[in-house]
Length: 75
Image (cartoon, rainbow, N blue to C red; front, side, top):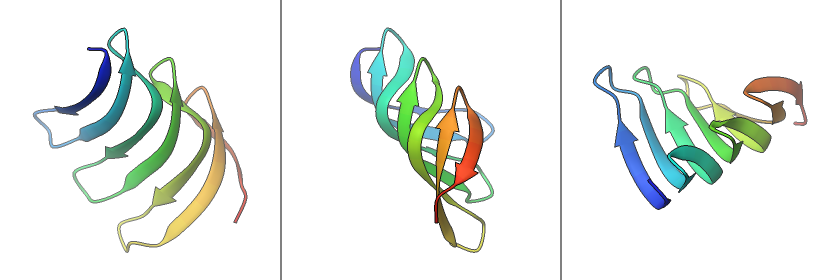
């Protein structure tokens, strides 16, 4: 996939956003079946850059991610 797209896994996970060479790249939203979300920057298929994490209670928190791991909260 290349460009914008939506992919839904059988277990209910869902990604909507940018792709380059079948990998999440650019800006997108990943949602887990329990309602948690990551909305933000992606690189090489992983969260990378600034993003917002939304928990099951719809509380939002901004942070910085590198290669799929949260490095720090910024708010």
